Image 1 (tube, rainbow, N blue to C red):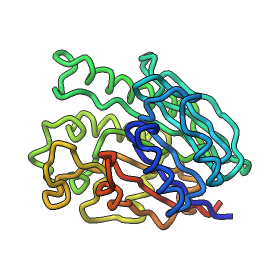
Image 2 (cartoon, rainbow, N blue to C red):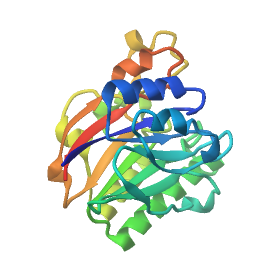
Image 3 (tube, rainbow, N blue to C red):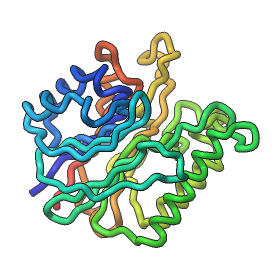
Length: 262
């Protein structure tokens, strides 16, 4: 049975309950992974999601900050979490489907504005978070797994609106890209989105600071869907739902989709 999965940094699930229910109602993914829910789990609008058929939830919440959740029509079980870089943040949760596929949902730290760990503690935390991801995957050698989330890095030149102008901007610096590449290689991960859409500009985030985000189109691809090598061939139909950035009171991120025949 194929299933469709989406990942979306919602930037407050309570504030944007209507946007989530609209997406679930119109697009009907089997699984929706959310980041930056900014809510304890017991304060999430779960009844609204259950009413649409998303009766299975695995989540880690935090008041006002961070938080990750997996909403599913398909049965799944909690597969744990890890406090990467010992930040005490709710930035990772995993769930296991009945077919054995494990889904990891990540919200990697943004890293602040200065790409120097000596001048900016947040940038150091981001690099440490990625380093621990690399080390965990190198040790665990994940199989039959999917990794999704706001990884806060646009790795390729065509993942940003202007490669040269963004080389010293956090999210596209060479040191961040190298760290993300190390994570991918350690876990044997494949970039499903770029496997399906191998060339061309592709974005999933547009800043709130842009007065006309659509016309300016100064985006970055910060949101990702990966798969381990043993299931990468089962992935297809990747797409990014740009239209949600134009919805009322939008998140600055948009959902990324992929379908898996597993």
